[in-house]
Image 1 (cartoon, helix red, strand yellow):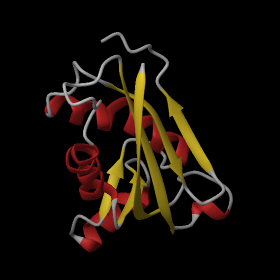
Image 2: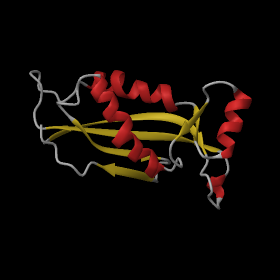
Image 3: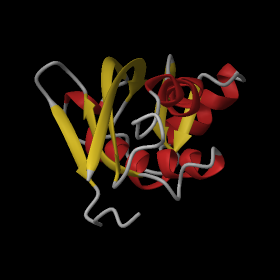
Image 4: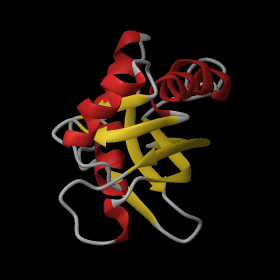
Length: 150
C-alpha cells in the first residue's frame, strides 16, 4: 500500500452543544487538517493522486463548506437561531457535535469519500487517515480500519 498526505488550514468557529466547560461558548480555531490517501498502485506517472488534484477536488470543497464558517451541531438551538439572524451561509449545520474527533470521522467516512466518488477516484484509492488539529498541540485522528484492496 502507498499513501500520500496533504495538509490544509481552515479557520472556523464552533461550540460544543450540551457540554459543561469553556468549549460550550462560541469560539474559533485555526484548524490544520491532514488527509492521507492510500492505494495499492500508482498511475502511469507514478502518483496515487496528483497533489494539485487533492487541492482542487478535495480541499477546495472543504474550504467552501467549512472555512470561515461557524460549525454548529444541527440539534443545537443556537444553530437555527443564528441561521435565521444571519441569513447567509456563515453558519454550517453539521450532523454531529463539532469536536475534533467527530470532524475527523465525518471527513474520513463521508465527506472525502463522496468527493472521491464524484471525481472518479473511488475505484483507485481510499481515504486512509484524517487528522484534525484543533490547536498546535491537540489533534484527533480517524483511521480507516479497512485494508485497501484495489
